[in-house]
Length: 79
Image (cartoon, rainbow, N blue to C red):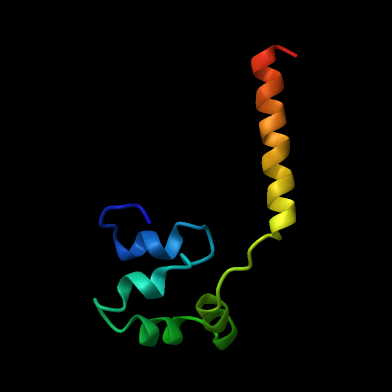
């Protein structure tokens, strides 16, 4: 995600109380990340980590992008 090597501590703390959603993808070749996380997380937390993050609806995302574009155009025109 960052394009460079980072320590395991960063992946465990970069989102505050949550683990990075890509921790399994990044660390599986280095050590038994699944075993480690299963020892340190509840079953529900581990299951939630393995599940894909919910995405906002496309319509909401489009509406937000349109609003940002309108605001940017208005600002450029000096309105």
